Image (cartoon, rainbow, N blue to C red; front, side, top):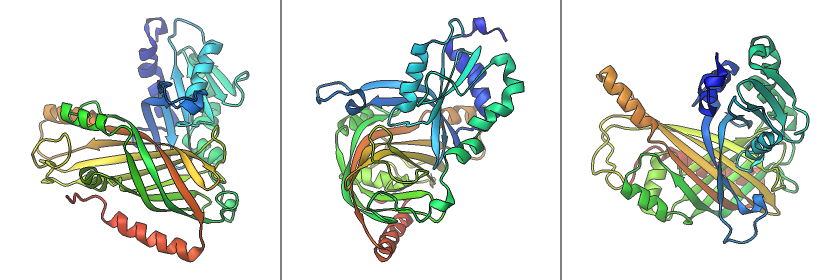
Length: 381
């Protein structure tokens, strides 16, 4: 391969993506790949204090995510220049950002690869060249493969009796709170939908009830019921299984540090049946869905405990797919492209009140949340 003819995009497509597939990562799987992950640089992260300071934005080339465990990032640079300290620092800011909170990252210009842990930018954990990759693959897999990440950063069963946070115990009730929608992204939304989403920036929704607890496996598990203050959005959230959020975390305890927040991730899926009337949903045409549309929503919460408040940022992205019978190959390509471009991404902030509770109250809340989940996946207007 003549790397001199590749630019940064070429490195991503010809080298990095096949490398990630070799490691065992696959878009939409438990070992997920997120492309061009958009970051919102919060004021507290940059040391900005006033609300007049702008929210800056960046983009990580690839984020590799093991659901319920952790993430790591990989950053591409053009082959025409060697990797520099500035390149390492830029990759670090993406990995260390509270919305990612990755313990390690990779940087490459196609010729050279380096793995860094975020607490040691002076000495990479492993370096290799492209032509060395086949022989070095066992070493690389031992650090970056999904199984290696699970082993290194996953929760341990012996922590099952550890309190989920200092002074909380094994169960905590989410006794209310709010989420604030900061930004939205949808590449193919109509002008009406885009205007509606713009109007939602800064809008707050209430958190009804929820529960945080430790599972028998040692995983931290959180679940909240979100109540939209708009009937149409509430109906859409229920349809897309985004009314009741369920997520897990591999941390031993919920973090109390804003610089090293706990990361909770989760996934919900479902099907929008053919014939579903979408006319009441903002930005959609007055029509029924012509065939079944499947969706997967990935949810990520990055937060820390401040006394009895769990606060931080969240993101969820929903991807759509469809496989109706009888389509010609050409039409199927068109449909798959349209479904791929119909993704929806939402970013925001949250502030939840947590109160320690006993096992009986935890069971009551669990039942409330179970009943809420039973209503998900249907459109009620």
